[in-house]
Each structure stands twice: as C-alpha cells, then as structure tokens.
Length: 271
Ligand code: KIV
Image (tube, rainbow, N blue to C red):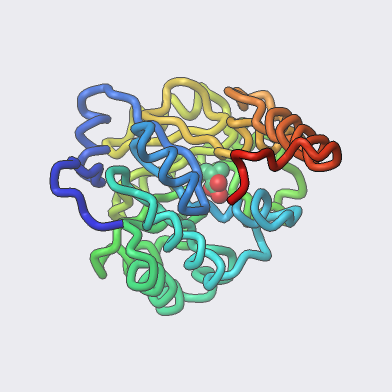
C-alpha cells in the first residue's frame, strides 16, 4: 500500500507516549492483506504478525513448525493492507535461538523483505545478547515473557506461568533485562494479574498483556479467536466479540442451497 501522508502513523514512540499518558494500547494479530486492512481501518494501534499463524492459518498444533520464509510471506501481505498501525513480526522458532548472528540475520530479512516496522522475540536472559545486537542494528524489538509458546515442550502445558517462587522472580529480572537491552515493549502472556501489574509499574516501557489482567499498558488477542473464526479455543482470558464461524457456515449453506435449487445465479447475476 502506498504511503498516505495524511495518516499519522503509530510508531514505537507513540506507544511510549501512550504509556506515559495512561492511554491503553490495542494490539491484534493478522496474517493476511484483507484482515490487516479491516483491523487497521478500525483504528488498531499495533498489528502482530504472530507465529500463531502456524496454528490458525496452517492448522498446526503448535507454533514451532512455521518457518522464517512463511512468516515473511504473511508479514509482507499484512504490510500491503496497513496505512496507520505499527506492524510487529514474530521471529519464528529456530530463527534466533542458535546465536546472535543468526538472530540478527533473521531480523534483517524480516525488515528488508516485508517492510514491517519491528520484530518480536520470546524469552529473557537466554536471548538477551541477540536482542542487544538486533536493537544495535536499529531494529525495534518487542519482548515476550510468561507463557512463551515456542517453549511449550519445555513447559509441557499451556497453564498459567510464574505463579510465584523462582519463576516469578526470573520473570521480574527478565523484564528489567529486556528494558535495559532496549526493547520498546514486552508481551506478558498468561501470568497472574498481580505480577503483571507489578512488572508494568516497575518498567518505563509498555507491557501488552494476554491473559495477564487489566493493569498491563495494553492488550493483545489472536484475531481468529476474538472474532470467533476459530471457536474451538476458549481460554478464560478470551472475550469473543463475534461468531464469524457461525455466520460463515450459514452463508455457505445458503449458497449451496441456492446453487442446488437453481436460484443462483438469477437473471441479474449473469451477462
Ligand atoms: O503469535 C502470537 O499470536 C502471539 C500472541 C499470542 C502474543 O505471540
């Protein structure tokens, strides 16, 4: 999409100003041109091209299978649909964990080949060198702590993380490390609301929560879940705003019935 000079774009600075002013940040996932256009025109602040594309677009059980090339395809489609919001792209599993040179190379590919504005990475201390290197190269990085789905086989469960003890202490330390390394925001996923509040208040950069309570500086949901496109995933933290699955099934059934009965196409629907 060509740049419309009348539209004031959301940048990482905008998000910082929003936190400073106490204005909440709205973020949703998108993976394709058409939905990115809908979400951007509705006024969202941030689109995350999440590696949840592995689940909701490709039907995989986890986020692990999606590749860097596939993320680049999704992100470049999203960018073409966006005029205003900030676009963050997940670095997928395997594209940054080996070492910081590989991580930087992956982040550079995303920025060069998609036109996106920033990347997101899961983890704290373990990936801090890579985050520092990517930030030094001028690429904005969003962190992600708590339930980090790329580590699902380490956790063995999608249950709430950091309920106390050493795991909660590590999350507090990691959040500070990410801020010091130059992250512009941090996603907090599925952690106790009390801990998310404490971390959000202790950081100067914004936190974006998913299943982390109302005291984060912003909220993110997977678009397919909140619009009811995918109706099988119903965690407690999800609010479903529409039931597009039901509407779409009704529409398709009506179409089938119209084709079978000969009602479609009618005289006006032909040449
Ligand atoms: O991939 C994704 O959609 C995410 C969100 C759940 C934060 O990382």
